[in-house]
Length: 320
Image (cartoon, rainbow, N blue to C red; front, side):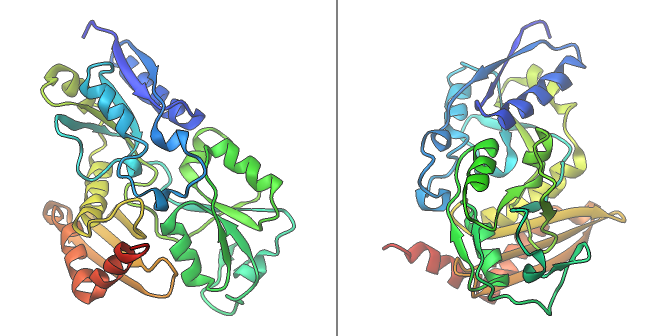
């Protein structure tokens, strides 16, 4: 391919890192490219919590439009931000090998972590005080719901902005800590020493994964991008996104999912929790890799039958 490929990306340091990652992988195939920076709606409004904005694809729509208008040839996204139904005319070009899927807790140095049930380098399942008076920051309703499920009397504050600005806001606050995606901090080398993996917190579908979107019909470019695709990551994140889509969820719904390949099988976990953390419905499923295509959808249908539809309806009725 002789043309210089235009790669669309948001302007943040993390988004730029992700786009440069794709750029380097293309360069390894002898494909030249340049980065085109585009501002998203999610970057412009940094005050309203994401779950209150109620917009699908808030971080991807501007890039989708640029792609459809041929201002760029490829768009690079954090896959968890991509709506489960892509814009008409666009397609998944590649899913890169997943980095850490975990959420992490970044805490102030003076925070007594034993009160949160973290002792001797591991999270306790019981024997700690879930009612301690902590204030934690996050803009994610999924993280908020899971945190309140474990710590029902904690206060949750909104925290928006790029990774660096959120870390700065935490340092300037009186909060005990804030929740971040491990991959985001690790990719740009800003994960603090005062951070711990939240092993008990189930991630957002496709968290820790970079997606490349292209136009349907651009066969030569799609073929080049296919070489970047990681088969197992693609399979796992598809199951997670099928779970999300079947539950008709988005960034304003506290839905979590994780699929992993182990011993030639796909192991799936999923859950939905009410925004106040009081009600949780979870599921686990395992299927052979050659028969795992419907795992995400089947898991969603099973928890819908267990009452997940009631939580979804409750969320939809909030504010009506």
